[in-house]
Length: 343
Image 1: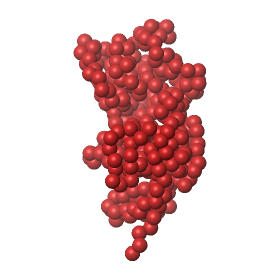
Image 2: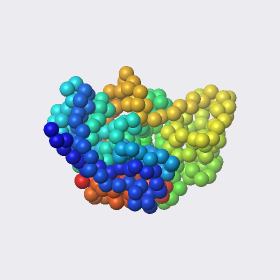
Image 3: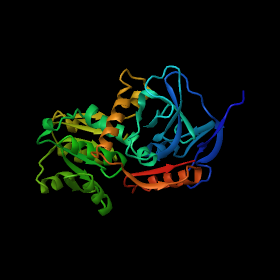
Image 4: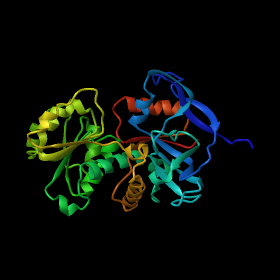
């Protein structure tokens, strides 16, 4: 029986984004779902820093097309024999797994335990902007930092979000505000400052300047929680100074430098990492939490409590446009999310 084909965008060589071979158009076999997998017809995707990190130049050549893309909105086409949560025709959104082929293809296989029902109030493009950043922000705030989801339990508490105008920061700002925290965001340009204020930030400080004097200027002596979404080592000393005794710091940004953890000792500060791919990579017992939290994000969106964070839409999904999207992200000046729709 002849295997059906599908369009995909991927790479064989890891090259600078201005090289035409850094991302290429291809035609590959359309996959077949088994087990708990769903086969999703991809309607829209968005691009995240993880895409540019994985694609960055290195001396490796892939034997098979490597497909990136960890934000998808689409329609369930088929389900595996062990699938119980979805049926063909369901509209879904998800981030997928870093250990499997990404979603930059016409059809995509994904484990149903990390898939949510797409918000009814959003089209596919606006929904595709949400999964990876929403999961990361949610896990960082509520799982890693241990912030209570009940606003009445967070009275008088605050959080500093470093790099608040980016994809994760845009969602984290809204979720933290919804949880009843006073939100202090960092931004450095008028455009990004306006953006985070629109999303609910109470104060904005500049991440290129010392934190504590700016916090004091806004009447804030110290912060209970810090979420670092940019250059962990660069902000380390500022975070150690600004965090309250027994406070908690979470970062999503790996570092090549040794962090001086002793700076946190006298205050008994907790430091924790967040990686949204942990649950899917290690098939953790609570992997289905990502299904639940995506459904909750959809509810919050449909209730008008959380807004999507698209800043630019590009069509169609092909190598030229994905190279353009990667270049936008690599500029380091992105506000919100870049989305591509339709093959």
